[in-house]
Image (tube, rainbow, N blue to C red; front, side, top):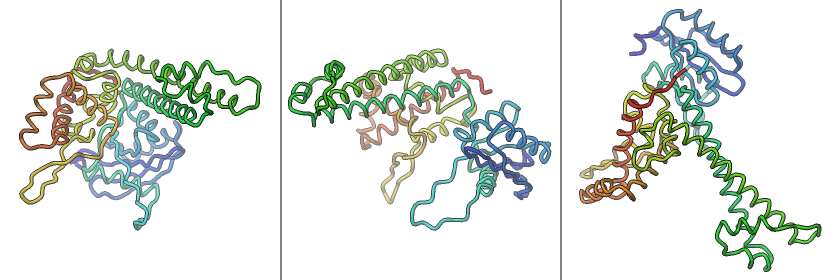
Length: 351
């Protein structure tokens, strides 16, 4: 029990400009001190001084939002040898439900008591190498989404264009369409065609620029993943993007207690859904959806290129499982094997 290991749990509710702290005694679960500090290095130092003064012996920090607003505080504390655990934020109250009393200090107390109850408390993602991968992934996904949006807007303008432009551009393959739009010139006239030509050329330029950004980020991701986990890229169906997602979710050795925790984080652990004589499990709709998508992509690729994977799915289907259930079983097996590979073959700095 954590209450036997530490004397005080410091719960922290993190926000963009301020952090609320509550010091809760481990044995009595009594709140001894509360404090609100600015989300800055001066505020971090003030919070650490308070914790050292009130709990000079064993203590632990329970942070909400350690991957967003609390990332700076989590990094600051870890660099100074403090033990930090991350706590999930509570689910937002749905419309129409009765709201309970709430404040930042109460949320900080709740975070501390969650850790004491054993219902929360994982090591935050602090490895600088995987945090660098996360930044690159965020930028690449934004470029890909914006590129798709710009291409859809371009095609919609072609559909509603005057007959001359529509007949010239509609039906062309994507590459030819972009090249044709890049050659359009608006001229100096104030006609509808001039405005449409300018808009189409602008969107084509945007698509080209965003694709160049995405390709540059993908090359950097591939280079970094190749340095951190070459054995991961050697696995069937694992490419640089999916490998980066696997590394980001895992973060560093020891963050997750077991491969079962990694599977639960990825949303591929089986959830019992039995009733009466029917014994079955269903898909998990929670967890890290980026990590879940990476595992799903690997499974789809292996179904296409790996005879062993196809044989496994056929065997599950012959046992009476649906195709979706067979894929769920395969994703769970994949999470187990990839977690073991990450834990034993990847060495990262956690400071």
